Structures are given as C-alpha cells and as structure tokens.
Amino acid sequence: MYSIKNLTLALSFTFLASTQAMCSPTEEFNTPLEEAPEIMLLEEMLIEPSRVSKEQKINKSIKKYNTRLKGQKFISFVDYSIPISEKRFFVFDLKDKKIVFSTYVGHSGYSGERTPFDTSNVPNTRKTSLGLYKVGIQYYGRWGRSKKLHGLSKTNSNAYKRAIVAHSMQGDKPENLYSWGCFTFYEKDLKTVFSYMRKGTYLLAVY
Image (cartoon, rainbow, N blue to C red):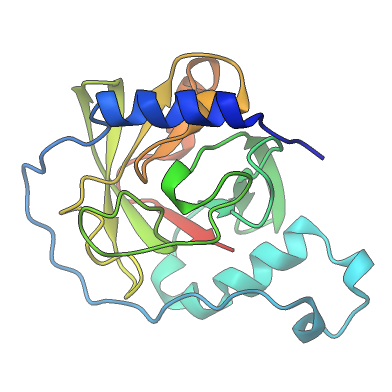
C-alpha cells in the first residue's frame, strides 16, 4: 500500500495553487449527455469478488455505451478505485476484449489523496469528474502537448468549460501526477498514451 507523507502532499497542493493546469476552451462541442456511470459493485458481477479481473470490470462498465462505441477499435479506461501509485489507465481492445496497454494516471488532489473519492462536475471545484469523454483536438499549452476532452455524461458535462484535458507532468513519482481535474501522465508515457487517445476516440473514467 502506498502512503504519501503529509509534508509531500502539502507541497503538492502548494504547487497546484501556484500553477494553472487548465487552458481556455477554443471550440464548441454539442453532444447529448449520457447517464452517469455506475459505481462498480463487485457483488453485481455474480462472481467471487477476488476473481474479478480488470477486463471484466471494463467490459461491464462499457456495456451501456455499446451503441456509441460501435466502429471504435479501442477505448481508454481509467479505474479511479485503484490508488494513484498503481497503474490504472488502460487501453482496451474492443474486438479482442483485452487490455493492450496500461500505465499511471493522476487525479485532482482536491478529490482525495490515494483515490479521487470526492468527485465533482461543478466549475471551480478543481476536482476530478467521472464519466464518458470524447477526445478532442490536440494543442500545445502550458503543459506542452495536450488533448481537449468533451464530457458526455451528466457527471462530467462541464469538463470542456472547466478545461479538463489530458497532458503530461514532470517528475516520476505519484505525487507529481496531482492535477486540478486533468488526466495527467508521466512525460515518458505521453507519446504512447496519445497514440491511442486519438481525436474522436473515447475515454471512460469510473470509480
């Protein structure tokens, strides 16, 4: 189990307060909202909790989006019930039903330390939002190469307005990945992550 020292967390929040992880939106995107993703309950799997695999959780989570995902090859998936110190960003092959890539991804420090248990869709809360996102254009901002994200669920409908995007962060420790709600990755992983997160693909974040 990973535990971040209080001093380290305090320094991380100081860093967050002194830097702006958000970029102003420059385009409009109108898409019907989906229902909020269900919090996964292992009991609903109808199998022993200890035997639930990552693939099974992904399959159950994306089932309600089958119509929207028709024609897609991959979906990016974030399981925020997994601690920030472990790999929890997965690229899932929709045809072969298997994970083809996994790595670390950050969350808002305002939503929790190890996991973002306190999420929000309200502007200016600087918290993580769950739900289905559509990947938008690539641009270069404060954090370098970044991807716009459009929230398609009731739980993340303000994502674009809040400038919730995907980008890299400097450093190689979990505490370096804290954000103001953005999906943050280590710089060394960004090229691979973005090779899957192409414009028009989807990302689903659950807890």
